[in-house]
Length: 187
Image (cartoon, rainbow, N blue to C red):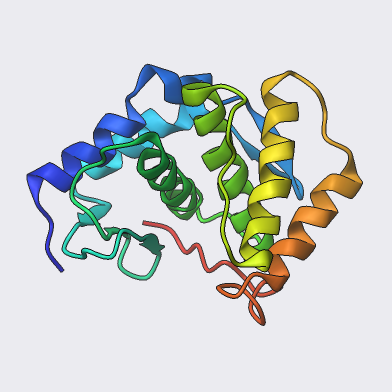
């Protein structure tokens, strides 16, 4: 594991960005989300309770709840897509801080909606996140549609939320483990 000041500052910069606070609150699967909790997460990172490992170079990101580490496959961001990916992983970290019990499908659904909301705030209602993999792209499409509704102040239908959870369960990263516990055990 390699934590650098640059990677840590990158994550803190995204968490403290004024546009991050424009992500609207919502509820999914009985779990609430509020972007106003991101500054609290920044404090956990500042104090070293959550680490930032930026030693990778593959462009990916993850959150490891066992080691309380945000893992970045990059050191700094050059675009909003990477910043949105950071917020996706920070969303998982938030729920780990407070030991929230939820399924992987709910956790990922919430994180994808946050990720898409951030891009909507930053870029407007333009081009959504996409993937050449159909299962991954369906998750982006459904999360984008939910994020757009939430940003407009509309309430998503329960059928739309169910569709996103089902899409997450067919996503190659989560297939076979989407119904299981997300594992958030506290920091």
